Amino acid sequence: MSASLPLLDSNALCALAKRSAAVTASCDCTQAVTAGWVSTPLSFPEHLLQDIGTLLADPYDEPSFKEYHPAGTRYESPEAPIAPQHFPYNRCQVAVCTHCGRHYLRYTEAGGYFVDRRLRALYRADLVVDA
Ligand SMILES: [Zn+2]
Image (cartoon, rainbow, N blue to C red; front, side, top):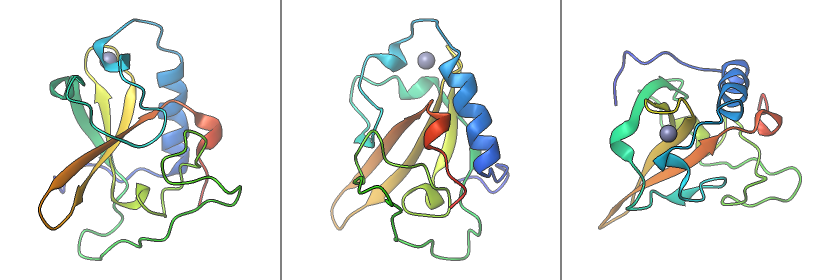
């Protein structure tokens, strides 16, 4: 986790989502379904991703585990709001695919015996909320 990544807010996420949605080029990064949170598929070209920002407001503070689902969505729902102050967005890095320019959110879920690298495509500006 790099301290030099700029902190992004909901406005910045909206702008990046719109840029992703405008990309029409085919790319290996769109082969897997990542509209909702998934464990990064083995087939996903992670080497193409480059972190460009963070949603972690304070690296010395444990971010909240509270989720934000006012419409009854679930963590893994493709319709779940992208709420930068809530779990898991509040610990995410924002990355861009250096091949096609689409954007992704990602974070590492650390369990007792495993680490799980979670990934969600960022292309739905309508899902981004300031919450
Ligand atoms: Zn790509």
